[in-house]
Amino acid sequence: MTMKKLIAFLTIAGMLTFGASNVALAQDENVTVTETELTTDTTATEGDTTMIEAVAAVVETLEPEPEAEQGFQQVLKEQFIAGDWRFMGIVLLTLVFGLALCIERIIYLNLATTNNQKLLNKVESALETGGVDSAKEICRDTKGPVASIFYQGLDRYNEGIEIVEKSIVSYGSVLMGRLEKGLSWISLFISIAPMLGFMGTVIGMIVAFQDIEAAGDISANIVAGGMKVALLTTVFGLIVAVILQIFYNYIISKVDSLVNDMEDSTISFIDILTKYKSKK
Image 1 (cartoon, rainbow, N blue to C red):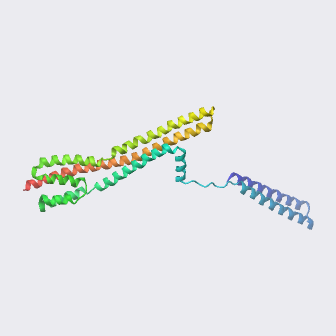
Image 2 (image 1 turned 180 degrees about the horizontal axis):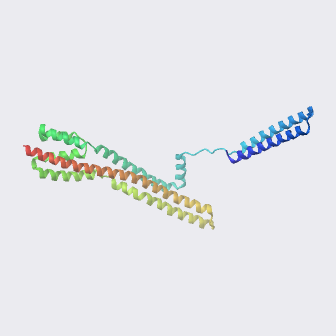
Image 3 (image 1 turned 90 degrees about the vertical axis):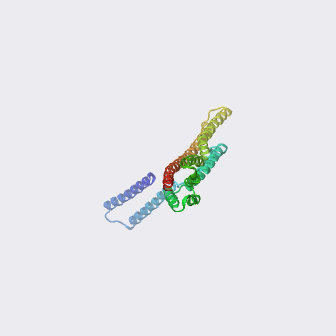
């Protein structure tokens, strides 16, 4: 119950108590109630009811109407416009390009993830049953960097195990470069987004001082307007940097996981080739 409703309730209760006490006193003083007095009491009761309804109507008019809540998109749009679209637009472009690169990398890395242990078992079985050509066919039909490394090693099998190891190391470096492709651009967008925000902050402060100089007086409205633009650009730049940093760290962890799987799988692959060569 709000304070206004509480006050109204206490007022109405007091009025009813006061009216009831008047009726009781009248009954104690005059034992025989005439028809005229009854008519007067009835009129008073109707007057009290009318007053109660009037007080309730006043309370309803004083009760503030709930304001319509703005949606998140509307608030974001208003803050974007208030922060000067020229700088906010540039920061927004860094977010768009950065997210595009992040999504492309995530899709590529997920497609590059394979069941390496299952592939090793297939290659070993193919070597025992069909030889090197059969194993190469298995690797050719399997997607992912590990299968490509195995194929390069099998392609150099006739040149010796040492050449196979060197070929695997060399081609593994090439595949690592492909996995890390585009990460430098994502890192650039992470660095440049807050810088653009700070640039908007500095320019917003300059504009605020120019407005103060033009007005010839330090006005709170002028200073607040310039500070608002300056701070909004900084906040937006920091938000963009945080979002891209989260995606960047996820991509880095994914690349590290793939590289570790590649190294473990190549070691097992060399052992399989050595065992197969010793049997021949």
